[in-house]
Image (tube, helix red, strand yellow):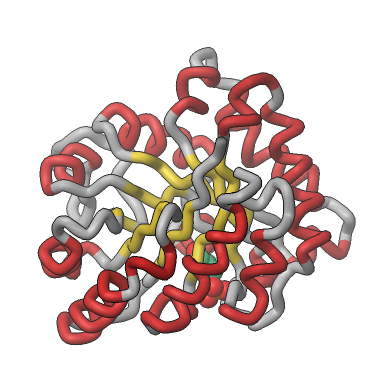
Length: 254
Ligand code: 13P
């Protein structure tokens, strides 16, 4: 049984007032997404407020990135141990925006993932192809390369035990253009197949890329789509709650 999971990636959006209002709205609507794992990943500086607002609600929270280092002279970085000590549960790793703009390579994402796991955080590892790569029919090749950085580790089986994957086609992020349920399902099935074994059956694979209240149900109806990683629509509590509620549709079959 894979409990559906919906996580909001706020990216570099928000303010104290917005975070409080958004979290209050998510908590108030709890009964609408009963049984679904729900989380939010705000910018670092909003974490204290988010933690306080969500306390006791069961809604998880975490960060959008983490350092690959344990501690030391790394100006601007935040360690996994710091996040864990503060009470975070989740951390997004290898988001395409980090890969494209901040030099996060496949190898670096594995180091970050190791730090997250060593500190007891649940990493959400993102993979996905660009439009150019899709047009060149290289989607599977790109996703396989991103995954293999992890699968080729000697202790891959252990790393896969405490991990969530997110398939986010870069061309669908923030563009309003969603992968069709069939397109997304095909890549999710490919990912599960590449992982293989018992780990594959237990692993949650989220879809991300212009998920909205209007398309969430059809995406979450696909057998290998276990929930969503939500950008723009996670910034309005009614929209985010509606998407979380749509994931309840999986509970009967989960
Ligand atoms: P959008 O939902 O805004 O397309 O963003 C998706 C995303 O990048 C989540 O990590």
